[in-house]
Image (cartoon, rainbow, N blue to C red; front, side, top):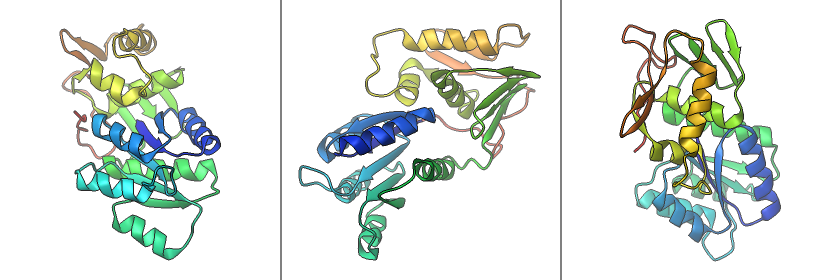
Length: 241
């Protein structure tokens, strides 16, 4: 999951970025609304976190309004030191999905992020299952059969993206865009390397191989046609272009 943070205070930005990355989110930090708006037009994000007061004359609420006018609809959380009803109402009326007052606990921000992502994805169950592979997004655990599998943060995020899009072929560009942040080099083989490591952990030693290579296009995670479907709504998730 990829998040856009617009925050001009470096200390707060570092606090939020570190907290989100510890929870396996990819985060792009823009220190101005202008920069954040440009990134939002060029990249695909799953959620945004915008501060109200920003340098440069464009507020986080105004940035939210401009994105909504352009049809960009990822969920947005507004951060503000102000707690007056007028500011909250204005933010929500102009397209924000949530409002969090500073100072805040990182745990509360994470909870709000996950709540919005669940609503956006219409995922009622935080547990995904493909064949005998089970991933729990709350406990951060992965089990195949009766074997617990230990993944690092990036491997977990990569597997979660595959499982949310079971049976859908994902290009390297789609994977890079949703699992890595803007600092990732699109000309490296980092996606292939991480998928090779992930395969060693979830496929090696098992008869059925779940991660498939679609030659000339990308990869997909898929069980046999008669295998169980992804847990949650029971409907296949659609990958973002």
